[in-house]
Image 1 (tube, helix red, strand yellow):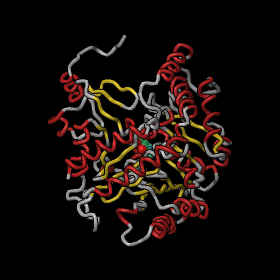
Image 2: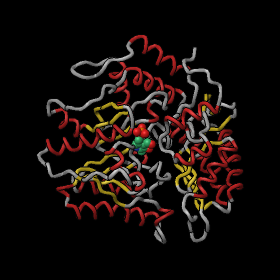
Image 3: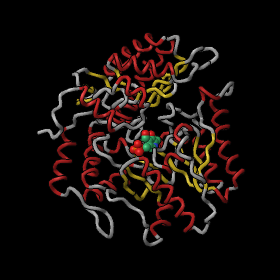
Length: 451
Ligand code: PLP
């Protein structure tokens, strides 16, 4: 029944890939090796076009929270395609999946969120939030409030606005980014940047960087602050416990809107439905994507707080929307995905069983000569590789050890990602203790080969 031509040859697919596609790739390197062709997946395993099995410790790209091969999700999509494959939520129309999902999301997110706006990706959701933020302050008759503060090493997506929000300099180079009106402050990266400070003092110092920036720019010019509760792509940067409460206070004090980008953290990754619950963040906007459908189909959602929604919905026509905002099939998939997460109690399991077990297994890596620090919250973790454990000296050039280790993982049949020299883990939430044991064995072998 497949509509994909049966080429049956890894080489042919690699050639097509090289000739025609590939995001986030060093093309010169790709031409040397050729991409691994991932042909199918089941549970937590990927199978390449040569039939080799890989343990996916990265849930695709932090997204396949319920694991691969869920028939009930396929059935929900199939049923919806037959019933109503497409209609929009523009111009005084809606449809049952969008309406139902909105209710579900409002019920499961922190209480102050009352409204939902749908997009296709985390990037366009963050883009839309910036538009909402600007509209909000214009409607509040404070049109000077325009600047958005973000953090160095943050990742918020790849559109021009989302990449401007992001703080990765290599994404800014060559594209004339960030756009005007986006500024960045330091990240709360304790292991890499705290020096002799304890976590609490360092958390306070990093939050103070926001206050300093607001005072430098003038609060009357600052519209919003955006942050991932835990920076994901930047290297699973878990902030000190006092960081977010301090940030929250500063945003309130200077009337700055707060945006929590939960694209990775949301839908149970940290052992909480949303990391905002863990840190006590009361954001004005929350960005959701990835785990909302477990990556089975693209969908993003912006949760909007009641106080902001009241202003935005009071303005008449909000001239913004996408053809696929609230796509019925994507919403039907999200509803079934959330049902699975709830019925199988996957978030509770991460919180009380697999998250703590991963912590325990990761601690064992601290004996390894390459490992400087391990950290995780739930099933989102990082292993920092360093040249010298005592001094925390990094490798030169930074990134080499991470790339080598990641390539060893790949050869051993394990998918992990490396940011700089930090190995990242973010598996499906369906993982059991046995999966964690299997992962630990393979990761240890990869580290030994890297040392
Ligand atoms: N925000 C965060 C925190 C992310 O990690 C990502 C993607 O990894 C995005 C936004 C962008 O999402 P997308 O790739 O769906 O555009």
